[in-house]
Image 1: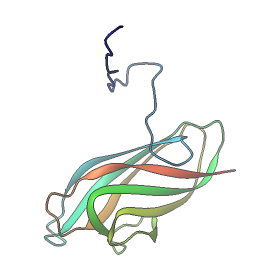
Image 2: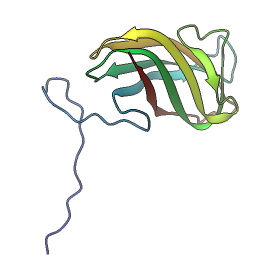
Image 3: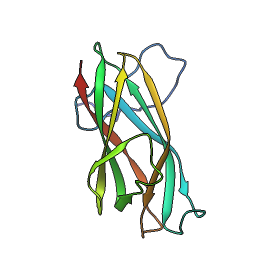
Image 4: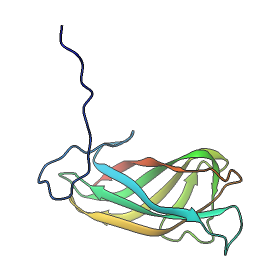
Length: 135
């Protein structure tokens, strides 16, 4: 019997092919968060981050419901977040927001003004997934 060797996943933008890891949803989007940090100029329990999404579809998308997963219960700061609209999840560890905008089959989308409130100072962004509405 052979020994099992766990596969290794690495990020290299210079490769022409790759595997796209996504959460639940339709599987045609990859969601990452960058620069997750405390926004003390707003409040001591406020956090902000940049949300990056890449569409890997053979179709266009007219609307995206974006599921954002956190390590603690959060609330979306709707007064500061302008690139998406709130759908559901305040007070839980999963917030759902909606982006109504056309996306081609290979679009990159960046949103730099996602703000949340959380009373747990160890909160982390744990990724996301997208429900894609095809055109």
